[in-house]
Image 1 (cartoon, one colour):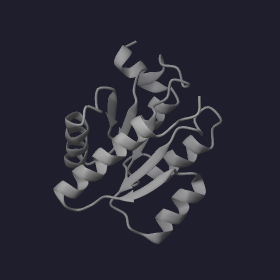
Image 2 (cartoon, rainbow, N blue to C red):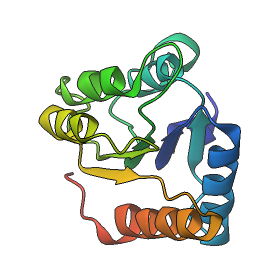
Image 3 (cartoon, rainbow, N blue to C red):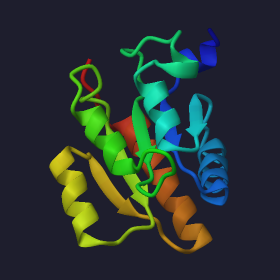
Image 4 (tube, helix red, strand yellow):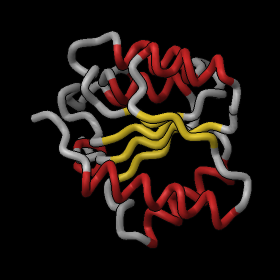
Length: 148
């Protein structure tokens, strides 16, 4: 198995290539993207997180330090991905940050009911979005103390 897949620190679950590219570029600029995996839909995210499908050779307990999760995803939506992560003993402690264009109160409330660690509406402007992603990366990879 590819060591890069084994050592993922950030799992970016984003179907919009422009948003993903900007997030990845921003994290690289901050030297936080060396161990980042970008998946484009909820089904691939679940395969990675639960070590199934194309990722069946990895170990579920070697999860990422943080998952940046969009809610509006093809195949399996972000709420279902969040529900599955937080509903499984093996993955429930992985921090999940919803990073979405949604500003709907029901999405915020439902995400927190499911156990999200943070809910952030994507800033519209390029610089604001880049700043938000950079701060997220610093906090979740360098400041936050995850459970062992």
